Image 1 (cartoon, rainbow, N blue to C red):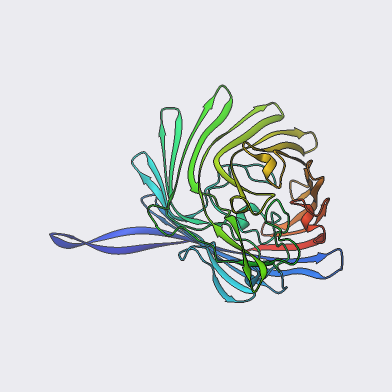
Image 2: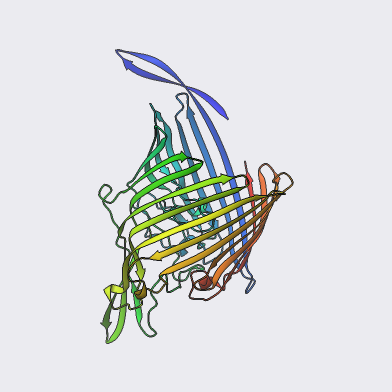
Length: 439
């Protein structure tokens, strides 16, 4: 921690010196992971990540926060070149140093108050929903699916250039966000380790039909194509409640299909396009002794699903979608946390024309035990989709050797139908060993 005094000169009829105290804080986090595929014992990933941070605090209580991420990946399939970068805007695209090296801006924002209004201006993350394992309302920022959903949300979430305004009015905490950044999900390429293959997520071409994937058609008007969101939060009769609204381009592109002939052979051309949707939702939670009841809901006015018949309506089905989660957490004796969630998604219209069921149900279970004053943590997370009979099992043990040194050992085990969202990665079971050091 260093404190500096900077002398500025202001023109007030005469040049006069003004002394401003500025406090600098800096840190560095280094993380390395080795992932081994249990199916063939091949290394799936060998990575090193460096995250330097610097905070500047001014004497008027404003602060500037910044962080970068340097990531090096040695194994094909999870390297920088294995991710489709078309979803990034020119302002947010990470710098690709070579196939395995990437430099990305993770935070750069100015934060402070003007009167009773709290402002956060710059490159940042906005977190609305807090469901375990899967997202319902945490959709303001897009996500990198480099490792499907296995990476921590804080790491996989893509920061956006955002104006974030917050103010308290009576018993309500109000938030307004304006996002002029046209950045969307970053998806793995077709030859990547976690390429999408489930017919619920990508169209499957008939055998013998050539597929031509065009470059995504993205919105490009900073003002007209901005995303806008509102949130109102309050505390009522023991309940923490929020009401959320977001007008955005869906972060997942619509994959429109067109069939043609080339040299007498059928060719399917897939054109990714981004479409607008209104999202209405909210969250709620309440604590009863050692129990917490919580939930979140999102209603999407326009969502696009993969059609069973690729020749009708360009292979997509447009429908509203209702997505929600209900959760219960129990803080049991002996520092044990037991948590369960019901997550469901409804296709409101023409569900019989899509490649997924009208009602999709996922159950999650989490059990975590803390030992040795929270330095040793053992946990098990299970995510199970009841429609396809697939899911993932994630045991993990982590130990904090020192305040700034932590190691962990875990597994990611996929099971179920290969056509399911989780079962598509049945060959990707892995063991993960990692270490994190902070300076």
